[in-house]
View 1 (tube, rainbow, N blue to C red):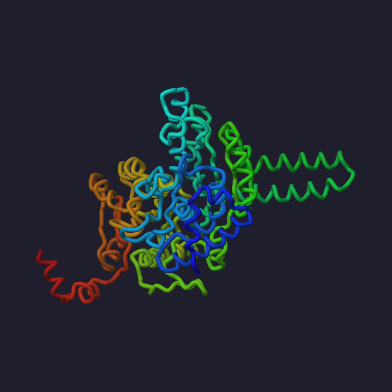
View 2 (view 1 turned 90 degrees about the horizontal axis):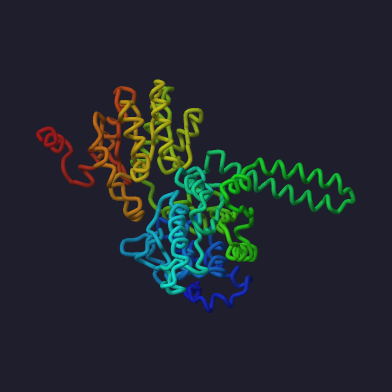
Length: 512
């Protein structure tokens, strides 16, 4: 199929002439294009299939060259890249020398920040908004200058429902109540997921709230057809009171944020109408948008966690085509399950990364000892410290780059208190196509500066076995570091990779 017509979508004059029906057709074409490109490489497909209509509607209402938009995480911006002039190089996404899988100012002025982590979208937008408010009365700044932060320039942030478990996001919401910032349009993309399904109550309440509104709307329509006005009003009042208990409107408006929604995130006409309302509204508001992760591709809709960051796959079946090899992650998953069978004191803790850290089987078999805190790494570490204090054996499974977000808790709650928390630190070192926002380089010097801890950097299966054997046997923190790679035994590495005799290699190792 010829997708070249998509290159015209970055032309604002061409785009503004398109009808809603034509935009819907382009949405399907974009999905087909994304599926085609992503089937050949490792990408964040499911998230991007769910945000196509959001970006088309944003492009219709706002000006990406002038308005300021920030992203939480940023892995969902593939359609945004197409709409901002990067279609012709899109086939290079997530490969060396090609487009980043995340926003990158080096690629386009439409990307304000290089980001890849949760929690930054609203705080960054706050900074932009405060700057705009500070400059609004200056007369020596040219109207229309992207860096002037004046006039009717809009500030927009796109965040996911999973970010509501993140401390930085909640701190930003709290700060908005101070009214030191100007207007921000917050678009809450609610697909009921973060990376894996979000465990904490806030995301669940968002879903409950959306359901309650659907029920309320149906009841109102049915009841208003009957001539029982007093009864109708009383019942609607009860429903309204119940609705207010279910979180979003009351929750966000307590922070001084006007709440609108939820709306259908795949209805372009509705999105355009609400975004236009937001553009003309004077104060900060949040638009709650319901989307389907993996929208339009049945295998991704059925298994959005697999297609969150899927390797190459067969489009017709959705089956993974890349040869399956055992990785450090999957090997860790086996080790902790085997250990947990022998010792009921072992707990596994993750920050919304059950699949990514290899804890699927543990969660399935030991649900009462599996803790998913949501996207709240600091909380994961502190809970681990509390468990260790009570004689349990907590294993905090986390990516190297994300442990940096909990550096204070690692030192203050764990190391300073000499608590035997076991850290299984995945993605240590360079991580290839995930890029600079995910390289696990900086945890090493940080850990090296901490006193009285065990640090083990794993090279092979035997290293992992030895490191895990320390669980429950030492009275100090253990940090087990391993890369995003396939794992082999020492003998296999010598034979297949180093092309040397394993026994001679062991003798050399002992001698040195």
